[in-house]
Image (cartoon, rainbow, N blue to C red; front, side, top):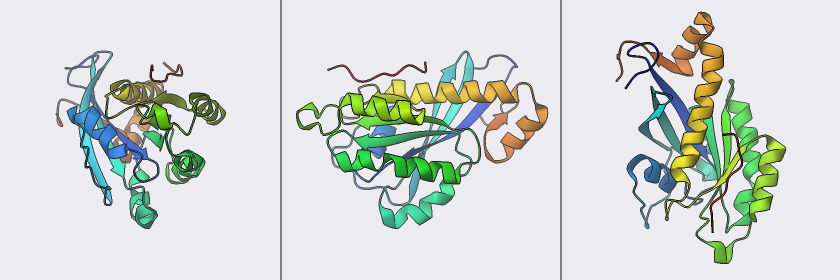
Length: 213
């Protein structure tokens, strides 16, 4: 589907970052394929999935990169930040150490991304309420402090996963629209390595939310 100029599409690169075993891969699989793997293994290096989303009648392709959270792979995955215009920073609500790592991941994102990035803080595994180690308020407060969107999700129960990704994609679209639609030179720059604005089919809100208990 296309809106505005006929045949116009957008391709946005989004990265999932956070400590190992916070559920990044299952969030991606739930969003892209509506699947959950109870026995999923740690991501080695980088994987990605492409999902098409309709934003205001325009076809938006989100290329979502799942980066390994293990320290020994960070040198490898750092190269994949280039070109990212969106990021979901994920922690596990049942493991405070993963929440404590959020600022380090945000610093790394800032270091490696040289353009405006739509950022969301995601408290995953909100189905584990009985062993919660990070409160909703703490997540909200950190998000407010860092200027992030915030949402709690459960990849297992498919809670807020679609909403979280779509909120980031819409924010990217809004950011790009404000810049690209009024600047041909900026559009050309973005099409090289940040955001591809594909013509003629050549390659075919800010509110704080949390899961309801």
